[in-house]
Length: 125
Image (cartoon, rainbow, N blue to C red):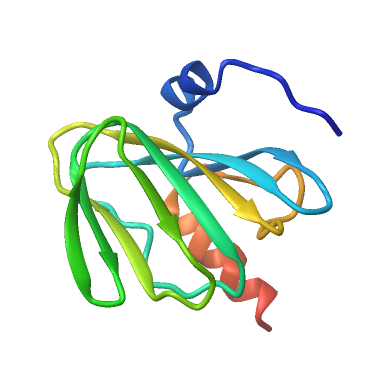
């Protein structure tokens, strides 16, 4: 299904840890909000992921290499890359990400990181 919206506004307005905005056969658009000190969690996907940071300060870790991230940074995470993103700032970090192909069920909303962790644990049982 086609999706057309102001992605910067959607990312800034999002208060949930993870919210799927659009899912298609080959890609998915998700907005995220990381609280101060919160991280996405070290993970590896069997797909490509592109992240664009809108608000906040933090660091990216890709295959053990740390780099600072701030608004307007784009990070490309190729499939099979171990990665994590950490909010090291004092304010909420806002971003949007594109998974290709989709990673989450269409319509997924995880209000908090704890909700996301619980949902992922349930998927693997």
